[in-house]
Image 1 (cartoon, protein in one colour):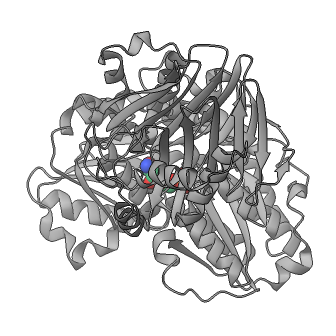
Image 2 (image 1 turned 180 degrees about the horizontal axis):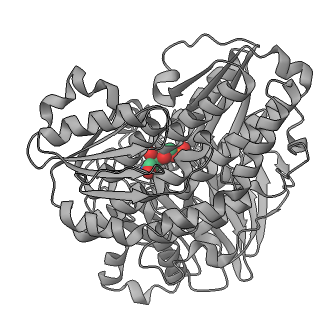
Amino acid sequence: MCGIVGYIGKKTACPILINGLTALEYRGYDSAGIASIENKKICVMKDKGRVSNLNNIEGIDNLRGTIGIAHTRWATHGKPSKENSHPHMDNSETFAVVHNGIIENYTELRKFLSDNGYKFLSQTDTEVIPNLIHYYFTKDTSSDENKFLKSVKQATTDLKGSFAIEVLSNLYPDKMITVRKDSPLVIGKGSTGYHIASDIPALLEYTRDFYLLDDYEFAVMENDSIKFYNSDLIEHNKEIKNIEWAASAAEKNGYEDYMLKEIFEQPTAIRETIGSRLKLGEKCDFSDLDISKEYLSSINKIFIVACGTAMHAGLTGKKFLENLCNIPVEVDIASEFRYRNPIINEKTLCIFISQSGETADTIAALKLSKSKGAKTLAVSNVIGSSITREADYTIYTHAGPEIAVASTKAYTSQIVLLGILSVYFAEILESSDSKVLENLKKDILELPKKIEASLNTKNEVKNFAQKVFDEKDVFFIGRGSDYNVALEGSLKLKEISYIHSEAYASGELKHGPIALIENGITVISILTDETLVEKSISNIQEVITRGAKTFIVTNQNILNSNFDAIVKIEETNPLLSPILSVIPLQLLAYYITKEKGLDVDKPRNLAKSVTVE
Ligand code: M6R
């Protein structure tokens, strides 16, 4: 939530900052602003609305400073408005700050600062930060050369909650300070200077060499130097990491939208995620995990914890692990898990799935599990993301940057990775027949080709989308794995098209929801489990009888003409079917949203990475 960008170097900062904000806009897009230093004065330009509005601000083209900070906002405290937009300054306009996160004790800090004569111009939690820095700066009467850094440190010590901040001061016109706690921040070393951003894809255009800041680690950039300090302000060296993503990976590459590009990237994303981990006739390779047979044998319970789409991937992960490893698995929503006192001990393995690796609830759930003695395993798509730094073990999907708010290729890659991990565990535990495992491996390796067939349903899906795009309510139904896919299909549709949709296990319809089915209501069914097909078809007939329009995604040969549309996908191992059946649903959500003329990549009220509770 919220994106922050910074630049200090040889070039004019403003265009670089606006470019960075545009790349980060998927993190929040209700207001934007930048601050740069010119002639020892901080110039702030900001307004509500999208990043592109910044170009309309008078004088923005004349900003020539080579140092600057910028922000695109997802409003938490205070409505989207010019006053609430970042950057925020202290009363004396000596310090400017952009912030991503939430300051939980801001009311208390505001009172403290008000009692000390400070005035507030916005409703934001952020505005306390520059004023606190100013408070500590003026209290320090020394001429210590590190006074700026010390004041930032003192201010951040008072903050409760999460933050990634960048600070400028007109007293130090060549210096920028950044620090983070539980909110993402990376620093890229470019050819003309240092680039700061909330995440890596926004900077791929400039560099692939990154410093990944730790919690309470301060970076001080001045001209062409960078220094790192720990929370006691002791200077240390920091390793630079080379990130392999190609610069073009974060571009649309000819597609109209990122979401469509990412849907069509799924064969590649799956191939990359399989990588060299899985080969026919060989044991799976997770040697980087260093999990012993002794430890695996001691596990008597697995939790899979995540949010949104990642949690839906976890539901399929549960099926893999229970089927192949014979270990009971519970899947939970991170925001529930963290507050429900789950029963966890050293015999529990907790798996956390997060595309971004920055989801606040998932990270908190991980920390809780660790504190209760469990081992933790992170599944993430972003190298060095917060979750991977907290977990005992990490495995990566290699889906490439996912930019659209609606998650697509990350979901299918997460399922594939959980599948391979389950095969790996089963091989160590000898909990499944080796022939079963070998056949499953073969099916996993065939997935990229079969995904192409699912993508080829695009015209049929588009036709159906044109018929139903102005619906108010849509239902998704399925049994077993198909129910898990129904949940994901429904989430996809509601988040980008704003159509109200619900997912139900088909067998539940008669226990209430069928009361809502009437003439013209659309019911989308996923039918891939041959053992349950007949039962599911009976459920579909029941909704047709009540006037529903039906759209079926199936790998079965269904001889029935009273469905409005049947989309055929390839057969595969039932454990893997969600990877193929979800694709027509991703396309359906996409085409319905396009028909409605909405912004597919940046749906209202949402942000790509939910870094606050
Ligand atoms: O980055 P994460 O995987 O932790 O994100 C979790 C959810 O916020 C995310 O999947 C969200 O539900 C997507 N917008 C769904 O398309």
